[in-house]
Length: 175
Ligand SMILES: [Zn+2]
Image 1: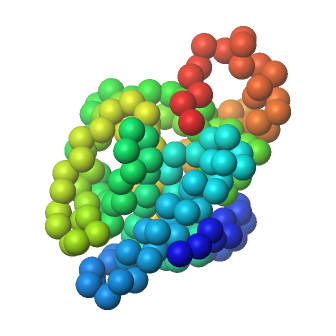
Image 2: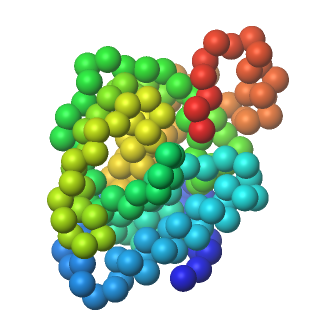
């Protein structure tokens, strides 16, 4: 159980398509979830933001994500099985490029099917902040980053510049 190093933009592991977890009984999954939890808590303490992390960000190319919005949830082999037609625009950020903000479009609502740590299948309906977070983290296990989803190149900005313009903007930063 440990705080792990977070891989940064440019590291090829962040571009890997991660492998499905098939075994739930050998303790590897639980240990990995604990590391994701410890690393998320540490990042949030040091940086003041952070609600989710994906396994490839700590160098493990398995399909596991961990989110903590109203409650902590580890999702193994998560898959979006339903998404609303309605979309929303928002400023997104990422542990793997903490100084950059990217404006992206996400579905307002999604339903995510996943295994829990015992291997049981669950469906999680989500909207708003949890919905966009799950879409962000599921992108990670497919090797996709928020920066790839920028609505255009003008909407990739340094956090310091974004802060200067935040009052002029009606856009919500939800992280
Ligand atoms: Zn991220």
